[in-house]
Amino acid sequence: MTIKEDLFTGRITSIDVFRGITIFAMIFVNELSGVQHIPLWMKHALSHEDKMTFVDLVFPAFLFIVGMSIPFAINTRLKKQDNPIAIWKHTLKRTIALLVMGLYMVNTSYGYDASKMIIPIALWGFLAYSLPIPIWNNYPSNFSKTLKWSLQYTSILILILMYFVYIQDSGARGMTVKWWGILGLIGWAYLITFLAYWAGNGNKTLMIAFLGFFLAITILNAAGWSEKTGFTWLGTVAGHFAHASIVISGVIISLFFFEKQSHPKIHRNIIIFILLVFALGYLLRPYYEVSKIRATPSWCLYSVGFCVLIYYFIYWLIEIKKVVRWSNFIIPAASNPLLIYILPGIIIYFNLTFNIKIIPDYFSYGLPGICWSLLFSLIMLFIVKLFNKAHIQLKL
Image (tube, rainbow, N blue to C red):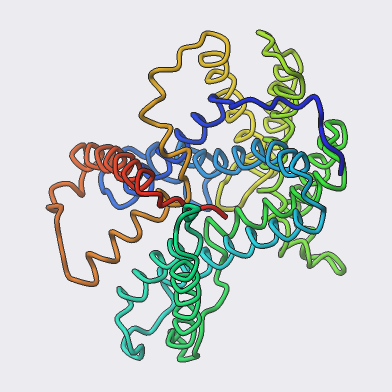
């Protein structure tokens, strides 16, 4: 892997803002999922439906922003003269951390026999969401190393013990991979895209070729090839490659926008890219439908197209027009995305553990519920800003 000398090196506010908006939207739709009697366009489309709502765009937006960050992250490490082994070690640690967190969070949700566990499932869930903080906190340089290691290794030990106290609804001990959870899916897609970026040396043309390859796997699976002899592996990996197609699209867009030290007003290549992904999604839809849950090819392509359009607007507003002040309230979420993602889970399981109910049932329905979800998301932004000041920032 070689250093990209012409990759933009300054702080890119538009990427931070897009990340912050994505995190804010993720908190909003997660809180909104518990609200009843709301419009269908504010809910996830069901698995059998051929449609997507704005809610189905939030997860791919997160995948997309992960991809946009990859070229800068790798280039920074190369410029710091990190050797390949150090970079790969860091990547694998990050992937494992996401997989572990995703696995614990999924098993918190269902599949357990609470009556046979020695601790309440609510407390188990509270620990599952809370322990990543001391393990992966970005401790300040003046923080006691002894205390840091004590916090990290004690938390790891507790997580290990939690595995053995977990009793499945089948009676078996220990957790299972029901699915990897949102964080785990991000971890797999990140790893696949990192491998492609490394193998292709960050070349735009090769990244587009990898995008085509990822989409081909997704299409073959949607076409039922996983049921054919010799292709059963497609059913296992296709979903991860579908998500990786969105991540690597973020990589491609970053390279289109920032592989030169300038901010051109019109990106013809970006416009062509948008038109192509929408056109391909439209052509494939009659055959494979649009579904987030099934990770269909058209859902991937439409998601990429909308993500690029949204980012292009943010880029134009911030990098070209220099309208930046409005974004100050969203930046804290961008600087600490993992923490703000797990905070609602910590709050939920804390309340369940101690049987605390703060919000009246009135806010679980209709317009009041929508307003509460929006207010809750704003509160999370404020809380994470306080955490940032207290030097509590998760960094994988």
